[in-house]
Amino acid sequence: MAVVDLPDRYNVAADLLERNLAAGRAPKVAIHSATGDVTYGDLHKLVCGAARALLDLGVRREERVLIAGYDSPGWVAAFLGATRIGAVPVPVNPLLQRSEDYDHFIEDSLARVVVVDAKTGEPKAVVHLQHDIPYTCITYAEQVLGITEKDTTFSTTGLFHAYGFGNNLTFPYWVGASTVLHAGRHTPATVLDTIEKRKPTLFFSAPTLYNAILNFEGAKSRDLSSIRHCVAAAEALPAEVWRRWKDAFGLTILDGVGSTEMLHIYCSNRLDDVKPGSSGKPVPGYELKILDDEGGPVPKGEAGDLYVKGDSALALYWAQHEKSKRSILGEWFFTGDRYRVDKDGFYWYEGRSDDMIKVSGLWVSPIEIEAALLEHTAVAESAVVGVSVDGFTKIKAFVIAKPGAVEGEALVAELQEHCKSRLQRFQYPHLIEFVPELPKTVTGKIQRYKLREKEAAPA
Image (cartoon, rainbow, N blue to C red; front, side, top):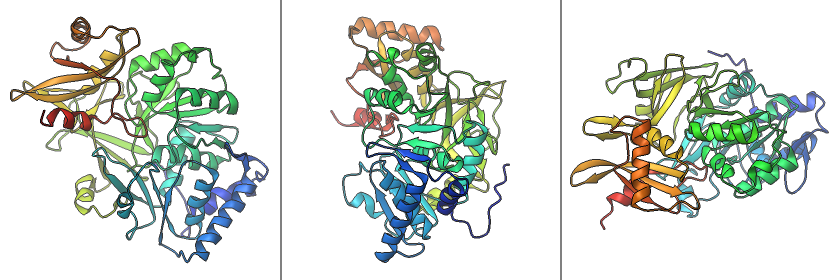
């Protein structure tokens, strides 16, 4: 287990700023944004100004400061300013539209709260201590990415999300690197334009956007030569997308698994140790184990529930006592993900525990079927769920066809045979529906529960 040696009175906002000023980086650019560059010296002034403004408003230690906004220097100043005065920053998804969506997070709280969209669509609050931030910097950012002050990070996932928060704030500031902030929605066009203009060295995104970029006209002719590492998280990266990206740009995507509860990635591929389609191996400082439904170990190669142990784990779910008890088991955290580990120690995602499909007594992973479908030349995206047909569970795939593909019974039969030829004979979609789009979170993760709800709704 990695050890983070911090003083008894530690303030992460002061640390992230003052370590860079002490290193002589005041004139160095900390943030590239559409409104202009911000140096570390400028950022220090912005943060101090935000801290003073909050104090003038009457904000005191341990009081909550809700941060609802798009990525910008102002967002960073608000977060670090609140932290600097001992208040509790509460970042929320700026796309939450109803005032009542925020009510849950304005009640009593603790050290640091990260807010994300849960798989049920309802917001959840995860409480972290300030100590957890340096831990992710020392373990994943330094030991897996090898981040240095020479790097420039660019993340398509926003600062309100734990993945984007590390990518575009804590990781670069920990070592004195620069970051690129883009306010608003990311599209293949905006991402490619930003990469060519800002020349980031570390690029972070979600598998869905990597796939969208590959399908974007003219993408292969764009200049991505500044990038030394590409990182994927938020959902499993299909091996086919990994291969296509490698062929198109000569870049390896380091896929990994993390969570808001652990603050960032705790299992990852490395440049010199990678298996396309897998989530890699445990990040230094973290331990993983796979257990069956009874809490016993599973044989290597078989799927089970994933548990993780590491010193960046959440303190608790705010105002969700029962959820905290179910998920935090001593030093171990129950992730809710189903995984298997192969003979070489690589972890393979099999789906969420509640996404798994039991057909005729056999468990089926939607991830494997989706990956197989994506290998077909007619498929752009897909999502697989279990549906009830006359009281029996059947496998249904929702497919976005590529331009030019002819949707119909012939393609359905072709896709079914395609899956049968690559997986076990029972691992194929009994039903296929062609759709124009799939429901997703703001980070690009497919919301299978919405597809299940759609199928369960009365006709």
